[in-house]
Image 1 (cartoon, rainbow, N blue to C red):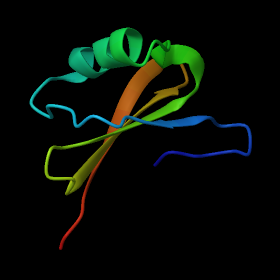
Image 2: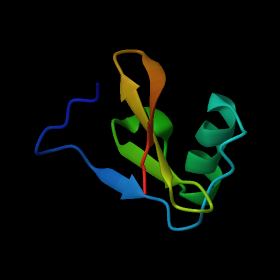
Image 3: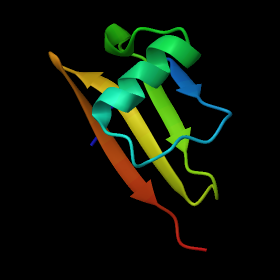
Length: 73
Protein backbone atom coordinates (compact mmCIF):
# COMPACT_ATOMS: atom_id res chain seq x y z
CA UNK A 1 0.00 0.00 0.00
CA UNK A 2 1.34 3.41 -0.94
CA UNK A 3 0.27 6.31 1.26
CA UNK A 4 0.02 9.68 -0.46
CA UNK A 5 -0.04 13.07 1.19
CA UNK A 6 -0.82 16.49 -0.23
CA UNK A 7 2.94 17.06 -0.56
CA UNK A 8 3.63 13.85 -2.53
CA UNK A 9 4.87 14.61 -6.03
CA UNK A 10 3.70 12.13 -8.70
CA UNK A 11 5.52 11.74 -12.02
CA UNK A 12 3.90 9.73 -14.81
CA UNK A 13 6.31 8.51 -17.49
CA UNK A 14 4.97 9.23 -20.97
CA UNK A 15 6.98 6.54 -22.77
CA UNK A 16 6.04 2.92 -22.01
CA UNK A 17 8.52 0.95 -19.91
CA UNK A 18 9.76 -2.60 -20.35
CA UNK A 19 8.25 -4.41 -17.37
CA UNK A 20 10.76 -7.25 -17.71
CA UNK A 21 13.49 -5.09 -16.19
CA UNK A 22 13.86 -5.40 -12.46
CA UNK A 23 13.87 -2.79 -9.73
CA UNK A 24 17.35 -1.64 -10.80
CA UNK A 25 16.06 -0.97 -14.31
CA UNK A 26 13.28 1.27 -12.99
CA UNK A 27 15.73 3.11 -10.74
CA UNK A 28 17.88 3.72 -13.83
CA UNK A 29 14.82 5.01 -15.74
CA UNK A 30 14.14 7.48 -12.93
CA UNK A 31 17.71 8.74 -12.88
CA UNK A 32 18.55 8.84 -16.59
CA UNK A 33 15.29 9.43 -18.46
CA UNK A 34 13.28 11.37 -15.88
CA UNK A 35 16.36 13.07 -14.35
CA UNK A 36 15.02 12.49 -10.83
CA UNK A 37 16.42 10.78 -7.76
CA UNK A 38 14.26 7.72 -6.95
CA UNK A 39 14.81 8.14 -3.19
CA UNK A 40 13.41 11.69 -3.21
CA UNK A 41 9.94 10.70 -1.99
CA UNK A 42 8.39 11.23 -5.42
CA UNK A 43 5.99 8.55 -6.71
CA UNK A 44 7.05 7.38 -10.19
CA UNK A 45 4.38 5.70 -12.32
CA UNK A 46 5.17 3.68 -15.46
CA UNK A 47 2.90 1.91 -17.96
CA UNK A 48 3.51 -1.05 -20.22
CA UNK A 49 3.35 -0.75 -24.01
CA UNK A 50 -0.32 -1.77 -24.24
CA UNK A 51 -1.23 0.53 -21.34
CA UNK A 52 -2.92 -2.31 -19.46
CA UNK A 53 -0.61 -2.26 -16.41
CA UNK A 54 0.94 0.30 -14.10
CA UNK A 55 4.12 -0.01 -12.08
CA UNK A 56 4.65 2.50 -9.29
CA UNK A 57 8.04 3.12 -7.73
CA UNK A 58 8.31 4.99 -4.44
CA UNK A 59 10.61 5.43 -1.49
CA UNK A 60 9.26 3.86 1.69
CA UNK A 61 11.35 4.34 4.82
CA UNK A 62 14.93 3.58 3.78
CA UNK A 63 14.29 1.24 0.88
CA UNK A 64 12.72 1.46 -2.54
CA UNK A 65 9.64 -0.64 -3.13
CA UNK A 66 7.21 -1.11 -5.98
CA UNK A 67 3.55 -1.91 -6.50
CA UNK A 68 2.13 -3.52 -9.62
CA UNK A 69 -1.47 -3.11 -10.68
CA UNK A 70 -3.10 -4.83 -13.64
CA UNK A 71 -6.22 -3.42 -15.20
CA UNK A 72 -8.85 -5.61 -16.79
CA UNK A 73 -10.45 -4.39 -19.96
